[in-house]
Length: 108
Image (cartoon, rainbow, N blue to C red):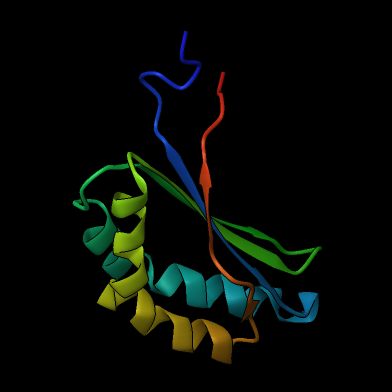
Protein backbone atom coordinates (compact mmCIF):
# COMPACT_ATOMS: atom_id res chain seq x y z
CA UNK A 1 0.00 0.00 0.00
CA UNK A 2 1.28 3.47 -0.94
CA UNK A 3 1.20 5.67 2.23
CA UNK A 4 1.14 8.83 0.06
CA UNK A 5 -1.77 7.78 -2.17
CA UNK A 6 -4.31 10.57 -2.31
CA UNK A 7 -2.21 13.15 -0.41
CA UNK A 8 -0.34 16.13 -1.86
CA UNK A 9 3.12 15.15 -3.03
CA UNK A 10 5.26 18.25 -2.39
CA UNK A 11 5.73 20.53 0.62
CA UNK A 12 7.57 23.75 -0.29
CA UNK A 13 9.36 25.66 2.46
CA UNK A 14 10.75 29.19 2.24
CA UNK A 15 12.43 30.41 5.45
CA UNK A 16 13.85 33.76 6.44
CA UNK A 17 15.54 35.26 9.50
CA UNK A 18 15.45 38.81 10.86
CA UNK A 19 16.42 40.79 13.94
CA UNK A 20 13.53 40.34 16.40
CA UNK A 21 13.72 44.07 17.15
CA UNK A 22 12.32 44.59 13.61
CA UNK A 23 9.41 42.17 14.06
CA UNK A 24 6.71 44.85 13.77
CA UNK A 25 8.21 46.18 10.54
CA UNK A 26 8.53 42.68 9.07
CA UNK A 27 4.96 41.82 10.07
CA UNK A 28 3.61 45.03 8.45
CA UNK A 29 5.59 44.40 5.27
CA UNK A 30 4.39 40.82 4.97
CA UNK A 31 0.80 41.82 5.66
CA UNK A 32 0.95 44.59 3.05
CA UNK A 33 1.72 42.03 0.33
CA UNK A 34 -0.99 39.57 1.32
CA UNK A 35 -3.73 40.73 -1.05
CA UNK A 36 -1.55 40.74 -4.18
CA UNK A 37 0.07 37.43 -3.30
CA UNK A 38 -3.18 35.69 -2.41
CA UNK A 39 -4.75 36.70 -5.72
CA UNK A 40 -1.71 35.41 -7.64
CA UNK A 41 -1.13 32.19 -5.70
CA UNK A 42 -4.68 30.92 -5.15
CA UNK A 43 -5.41 29.96 -8.78
CA UNK A 44 -2.09 28.15 -9.39
CA UNK A 45 -2.33 24.59 -10.68
CA UNK A 46 -1.89 21.92 -8.03
CA UNK A 47 -1.97 24.21 -4.98
CA UNK A 48 -3.38 22.47 -1.90
CA UNK A 49 -2.59 25.19 0.64
CA UNK A 50 -0.33 28.17 1.34
CA UNK A 51 0.65 29.52 4.76
CA UNK A 52 2.70 32.59 5.65
CA UNK A 53 3.82 32.65 9.28
CA UNK A 54 6.07 34.65 11.61
CA UNK A 55 7.76 34.03 14.95
CA UNK A 56 8.48 37.49 16.37
CA UNK A 57 10.63 36.25 19.25
CA UNK A 58 12.80 33.94 17.14
CA UNK A 59 13.06 36.46 14.30
CA UNK A 60 11.86 33.94 11.73
CA UNK A 61 9.36 33.87 8.88
CA UNK A 62 8.22 30.91 6.86
CA UNK A 63 6.06 30.31 3.83
CA UNK A 64 4.79 26.74 3.61
CA UNK A 65 2.87 25.55 0.58
CA UNK A 66 1.57 22.14 -0.39
CA UNK A 67 1.42 21.01 -4.01
CA UNK A 68 0.37 18.11 -6.18
CA UNK A 69 3.75 17.76 -7.93
CA UNK A 70 7.25 19.23 -8.24
CA UNK A 71 6.16 20.92 -11.47
CA UNK A 72 3.25 22.54 -9.66
CA UNK A 73 5.47 23.77 -6.80
CA UNK A 74 8.02 25.23 -9.19
CA UNK A 75 5.43 27.70 -10.51
CA UNK A 76 6.40 29.77 -7.47
CA UNK A 77 9.98 30.14 -8.78
CA UNK A 78 8.86 32.55 -11.48
CA UNK A 79 5.71 34.06 -9.98
CA UNK A 80 6.09 37.79 -10.64
CA UNK A 81 4.03 38.86 -7.63
CA UNK A 82 6.17 36.78 -5.27
CA UNK A 83 9.38 38.12 -6.75
CA UNK A 84 8.05 41.68 -6.41
CA UNK A 85 7.42 41.17 -2.68
CA UNK A 86 10.90 39.82 -1.97
CA UNK A 87 12.56 43.27 -2.25
CA UNK A 88 10.38 45.02 0.34
CA UNK A 89 10.66 42.06 2.73
CA UNK A 90 14.46 42.03 2.41
CA UNK A 91 14.50 45.82 2.96
CA UNK A 92 12.59 45.16 6.19
CA UNK A 93 15.57 43.05 7.29
CA UNK A 94 14.67 39.50 6.29
CA UNK A 95 17.44 37.26 4.93
CA UNK A 96 16.12 34.21 3.11
CA UNK A 97 17.52 30.70 2.99
CA UNK A 98 17.36 28.59 -0.16
CA UNK A 99 13.83 27.37 -0.90
CA UNK A 100 13.37 23.62 -0.62
CA UNK A 101 10.70 21.37 -2.16
CA UNK A 102 10.18 18.23 -0.06
CA UNK A 103 8.60 15.02 -1.30
CA UNK A 104 5.87 13.82 1.05
CA UNK A 105 6.58 10.44 2.61
CA UNK A 106 3.47 10.20 4.80
CA UNK A 107 0.90 12.36 6.57
CA UNK A 108 -1.83 12.17 9.21
